[in-house]
Length: 436
Image (cartoon, one colour):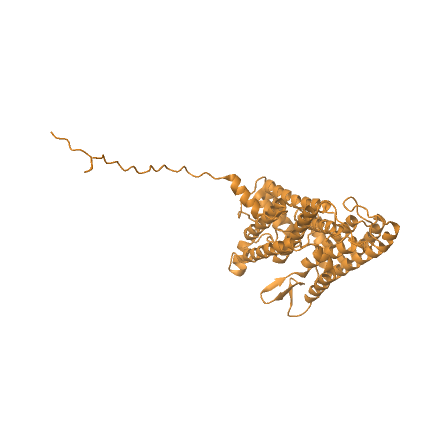
């Protein structure tokens, strides 16, 4: 047999075409270092993520709890189980926008516009009495409404008072300047308030309390009054002045109780709620039932019995009872730990701030959150007489949620300025530490 050669006409052997071998690429693994670098680049340089995440998480949890506590009532009264949930979600979105705005707006701006803010707050408090604008519910005129927009001016007034008080308290009086020409380091101590400063802060605080009491809203008056007292103490008021300030309270409180018969009834129900189980004592009894039903680990989300029209105002003033019923003692304690962490972080940021105005702003905001939370939980657990007061970041109320979140943005801005500018700042020639 003749073998056929694989050579070409030229006698040269043909070369086999060799295609490059394609190697299978190994599956890409997640490069956690690149992801971390990317997310770090996205994050603002001086942002305190722990505080921001805690506030956003607590606020989102509040929206979920509003739905759980109100879906049945909303279906019965509005034929829409998402009625309260949708409005609270709008408040959360508005709060996120405000927390972003206040984070990027330098906090010293509030010092410059403290008096205009004071005028706006007084104007809003007066608008609740204007027919066609003020909205009356359950015998109280606490809201204003324009079109479909509704807001509660007293929520804004509380933080306006803190801004004004911080401005007045952080201004160095001419008397103290004559005593010493050397500025004392503000990150170590606070100066004592003069009589003029104390009187001005008291005048504005008492004026706000008077306007809010006319609505009437005794619970907000109690909160603002307690916040004013704590702020004055933290801002450097003398103990003897605080003692004199407290004396009128012992006279005014009995007068305010006697002025409204329903307040006497609430006080009696607090002493013995089971004496009037179908009247004034009903709400407190149902609140205690809810907390008792929760046990150690709770009945589970949306499994509350008291939310089915047994506990009045379960989505607002008594929402902590629903938390206790659905998540038990363990869930309620975890919630309190997160809330306590937020309050601690705000106080810590204020302590680090060398600018007295920023320091006092933080102290005032943290004090308000602590006092309002403590009063709400004390009412829910039967520790003090019942009074309507929302739980910060949780209770139904878009105005309350948005304003509290905007205050957190101010705190984050103070922290950003403190980290960026270092431990010390110079004082202005007028003796006022303006920061920038």
